[in-house]
Amino acid sequence: MSWFGKRQPPVITDARVGDAAGLAAIHATGFERGWDALEFERMLADRLILAHLARPGGKGTPTGFAMSRLVVDEAEILSVAVSPAARRAGLATSLLQHHLGRLAAAGARKVFLEVAEDNVAAIRLYQRHGFDEIARRNAYYARAKGPPATAIVMERVL
Image (tube, rainbow, N blue to C red):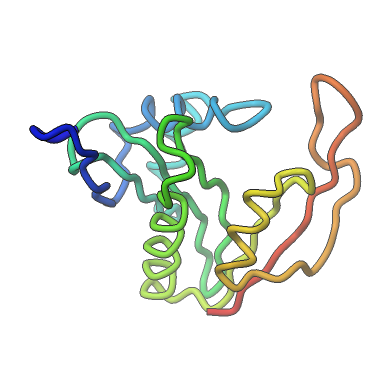
């Protein structure tokens, strides 16, 4: 919050290994099995991983992130997540736009991702950013309660 009670716009920066705990906390709020801080540390230390995070006003606790693996000219979005308090304010859109721009600048020509078929908000986000469904993986995501969810595989040419 600013001095006048207004939300400060997010500042999107590269994520670092030291951000692992904050990213793990966000991830745990949006996925059946959240990745822990050690998993994030390992991924953020990998030279093939590009990750960006958002902080209100550029300070404090991260409120969202996007992470991909880039190999040659193809990238796979591993995760996009926004903390519950920051959802429905356009942060995922800002993160994804920034992230896709950085992937393109790093040489990516195609970007792939998988999303659970019941994650309607994420599917709409990806469709608005030019991703198209190219395949399905039946019973791909295990669920603690209920049957496994089908994954929709999506692709976008940059």
